[in-house]
Image (cartoon, rainbow, N blue to C red; front, side, top):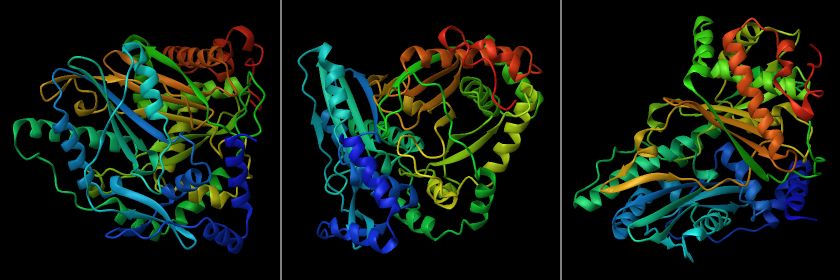
Length: 483
C-alpha cells in the first residue's frame, strides 16, 4: 500500500469511529511535552482538518504553499534575515507548533526567536528549478518545527532567489500579500537604518480561532443542508482509471484571453447586474456541464473569511470554501444561466462564513476516498495582487516572481483567473492521475470559446455550445444530460 493509500485508509477509519474510540485513538498517538513559555490555544475548524491530514500522512506536501522571488542586485542577507525575524515576532501564528493534548489538538505559540535563512545549494543555473522544488516539497513537521521556512539560492553574482514556504494551516492567499508587504518594508528599513513602519496588530490569529469555535452557525448550516442535500459528484470523462485513493498529484495548463475577447462578456454581465466573477463562473459551469454531461454538480469557491476589519492585517488561515451548486437543467441560455449563478452566489455569500468542515459534517456526505468531498471542481477570480506582491522593486533590488511549477492539486480541476491590462489570465490545475495534459488543454480551450461566444450572443442555449470541444472528446461532449 502506498503512502497516499495508507493516509486515505487512516482518515476513513478515523472518520468512522464512534466518538469514544476516536478519542482513545488520538490519545494513543501521544503528544509532545509542554514547551516552557508556550501558550496553548484551540485550532480553528479549518486548521483542525489540515492538522488531521498532516498527522496521518506526515510526508504529504499538498498543503505546502510556496512564494519565490528573484532579486537582482547586492542582497543584504543580514537585513533579509532580520526582516523575516521581525515578521515572525509580530505574527503569533508563524511561531506556532501543533500538538496533541488529551484527545484534542492545540496550537502552541512559542516566544519570538531568530528565523534561519537556509542556503539552498546549487551546482549551476540549470540546477535551480530542481533545488527549489526539493526545498518547496520538503514536508513540515508541524509538531516540532515552524510552519514557515525561508531559503536563499544564489545562481550568480548579484542574483538571488528567495523561497518562502508556508504550510496552509497558517496562511491563505490574503496572508501572502500581508507577508510580502511587511517583508518589503522591513528589508528597506533595515537597509536604511530605521524602524519599519508597520501597523499595530489589533489581535492575533489564535484569538480568532477561539472566537470561531464559539460562533453559532445553526442558521447557515440549515441553508447549506437544504441547498446541497443530494448533490451528485462531478464525473468528468477521465483518460486514466480513477485510482482507489486520492493522491493529489497534479499538472497545470495556462490561459490568456486578450481584452477584446473578454470585454464583451463583461458588458453582458453589467447589463444583467452581475459581476465579472458571476459571468466567468457561469462560463466555467457551462464548460464542466458540457464536459461531463451533467446539469447538477458543485463548484467550490474560495472566500476570504475576513469579515471584520481587525482581521485584515493578520497572517493566518481565515479562508473558507463556499459551495455553488450548479443548475443547468432545461437547456438554459447563457443569460438564464447567468441569472441562476447570480442568485446562487448572492444567497451563498450571506452564509459564506459557515466553515466548510461544518457543512460536510452536517450533510453527512458519503465518504469516497478516491476524490475530494462534495466539490471536485474549484473556481476563483482573483483581484490583482498589490504592488508589494508583484512589484518590481524591493528597496534597492530589482524583483520578479519566480514560479516553481506545482506538482499537486487539491481538486480534480481548479481554475484560477485574474483580470489585468493584458486581458484575462489564468491557470487550470488538474489531477494528473485522471487527466492527460491534452485533455486539460481542451478544457481550457472550451472555456475560452464559451467566453467568446457567450459574450457575442448571450441568448445562445447551452446545447448550441456543445461544439466548443473538438477532437477525441467531441462525441462525449455532444449533449448535456438531463437538459
